[in-house]
Picture 1 (cartoon, protein in one colour):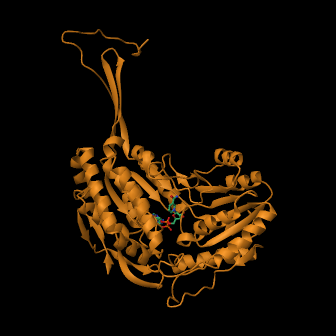
Picture 2 (picture 1 turned 90 degrees about the vertical axis):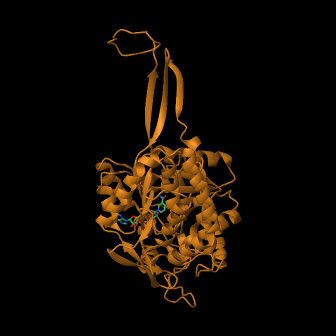
Length: 497
Ligand code: NAD
């Protein structure tokens, strides 16, 4: 089975090269994805270019109505979407359903297009002079997305970009492209004119073709930090707008006064859900005080006995495999290096076997204690089901660790002390903060983004920031002089003095 592109309203299988798509639970290639060449990408850009003039002039309310239908189609086809996510990504169906729901909430936000694009108006900025700001589409926008949310992250981007009057080209991850292509087909079925949304599958060659084409005016990227940085630099050097969201290392501080049982269950879900392959996964627990650390490690270890690792369609499973054999080996390498560098391996998930899925890319839940800042496994984003525990004496020490880390995506504090929580929220150098909330992923009507090397660019993803990212402000100032009234030339700067 081949996963093609969606160009000018048609699914096409280009004559370009192919790459295997794996079912990571089986450890077998079950499909192939077409890898777009420069020419294939150019066809998609031309199709978007042709569709743009009519789409930019389509009333926002009509664009929004298509999004209402799209939302219904996503809901009606939820089972198929979750199945596609599960078989290519490996996440369990209940987790895939959560991903889809979070994506649908962005479509709901996009349904508010007429309100979101209302603009700003000032009457009488001067005598008989009115002024208003209008938000116009930027043109053709490209979206490049990661493997870990093949539905949610594309839905962070194209619904808002499209209701703002842009045409969009999505380049999903080549590791699990099926669900991304399918939701784009549903958007067309909902009524999008051909060319308004195109999908090109592929890798670096396809991305380079998008970045190097002057017809593409803006780029939204989500993925790892080295690629995010390279894409940001290249796009901006080409004069494009770019927002590039990168990797993460998210810490949770556990204070001595925290409700430990609650913190433990929250940490279990946030560290191991989706095999730790979430950019908001909590991968480091920083315990304040040895007593807190001892209690935390003991209870997490106890809780981990109930983790069930397996195949996506079994709802009883807690999480599935990681995405590729190479990534599995990389996660295992980090666990080994933590042990070699002096950390304590409390629960070791390196040698797990799932009966019936012996070739699958599984890593079991892993708990590592006594991790220190200079360890390689602490500095890297492991992106696997690995929870590291660090021990500090004070909250200030815990905050210093977080503030000095390369990444600044998400963080959380578990405490009963409102004053400490408020101080933490105010002073931590991280873009998304939870107070007794382990995964503080902003809802669709806020915006999503980290600080430091977790985001390159000025505006965050989705929500109000996305409306600004996908539009250009134009400010118009007008006067209609009464018949016969003439003003002489003035050579000074016009003011209202
Ligand atoms: P990745 O960087 O390998 O790939 C992301 C996208 O970039 C894919 O579409 C891929 O085809 C493309 N790509 C990869 N290498 C490229 C290159 N050299 N030139 C041009 N394009 C290239 O990321 P991934 O492994 O798919 O996803 C996991 C990463 O994404 C993690 O680091 C995770 O933290 C991050 N992520 C971040 C967020 C966020 O919001 N900050 C959200 C989800 C995932």
